[in-house]
Structure formats: structure tokens, C-alpha cells
Image (cartoon, rainbow over all chains, first blue to last red; front, side, top):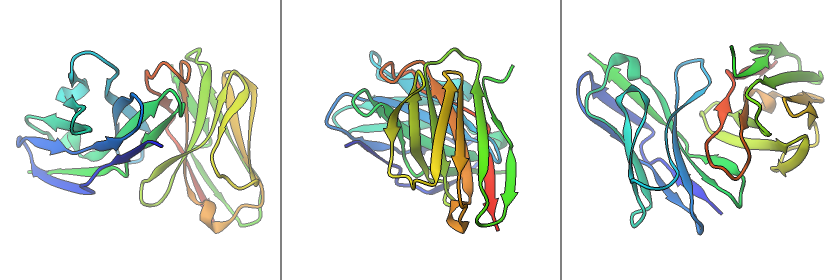
Length: 113
Length: 114
């Protein structure tokens, strides 16, 4: 069975500071990895995904994530955050065998001045 | 053009009632899903349909019944609503289960049972 762990439920950060949101997964088969963002009272929007190839993937809004197979991690980073990045961020894993997205519990990114 | 649309956006109803949430996608995707997001923001899959066929049915009470009249629509009917059913329900779609390209989500339906 696949699972996703997001260790940080909340991450407070000042505007223009860098941020890293952590995600670890477990799966016995190859996985596809995703980060989704949910703004208040909105649906989920795909930020970026890792399917194969280069382990560093770039997404929208200046976010990037690095797939580390040995550490089974897929941490999300942004070098300089904005107030508008305040949202809930979800890491998700997909395997062909499960045919579904399994989500982590989410990390609330709170950006302040 | 909205890719995945759900109606209604908000639904307030009394315990014991029966209600439906509709979902439509105009992306030409083969697979559609229903996810439930609880008050702690945890997202869990409920159902998945591929070309109108049920392929995933996670441990969901029988009171919840999905219906897919065609591959662009996946509706969720809930009988005998309970307080614990209060949540945000998200519809999603993807190309097919195995491509791993990710799912596109609707805006959600906030269901409140009083």
C-alpha cells in the first residue's frame, strides 16, 4: 500500500523568505508524485509533478520540488515566498496498481509581512 | 471554460434527507473520482469510475451511491444524511488511471448537515 507523510502541519514564514515543505512517501512500486495547492475556499490546483526523468521539477508560481528515491522524499521549495502563497499544500502519490491519488495530510503555509 | 464543474457549491440540509451532487468534466477524460475532505483538510478517495465503470470503491457507507450516466458525468447521491457527512466533496477527472498525469479537481461542494 502507498502512503504519504507531510510532517509539518503548519509552516509560518515571512514574505520573501525561502520555504521548504516536506513530503515523504512509501510504496513498494514505482510512483508518480504530485504537489497540489488549495487556496481558501477553492479546489485543488496542480503545482507540479514528477513522472520520470530529471529529479528536479519546476512548477507554477516559482515552486520546484526534488524527487529523492533513496530518501523517498519529494520536498517542495520556493526561494522567495509572497503573501499570495498562503494556502494549504498537499503532496500526493499515484501508482498504476492503485489507480488513485493518495494524499498527505496537508501543510498550511502561512506567509506574513 | 470550467474543466471540472460541480453543483451545488454549497449545500445545507437536515439529517435524514437525501441529496445529490453533480459533476461534469469537459476535458474528454476517461476517469472521474469523488474525494471527501474532512474538517481537518484530510483528502480521501471515495469512488473512481473509468468509462462509466466503477473501479474504486473505498470503504464508503452504502448510503453513498455514485452514478455515471456517461464518461463526462459522475454524480454522487447520498441517502439518509448524517451529521458526520458534513465535509467538502471534490470531484476530479484524469486521462486514465495509469498515465499518472494527475487529476483535475472541481471547486468542491461544501455539505453541511444540521
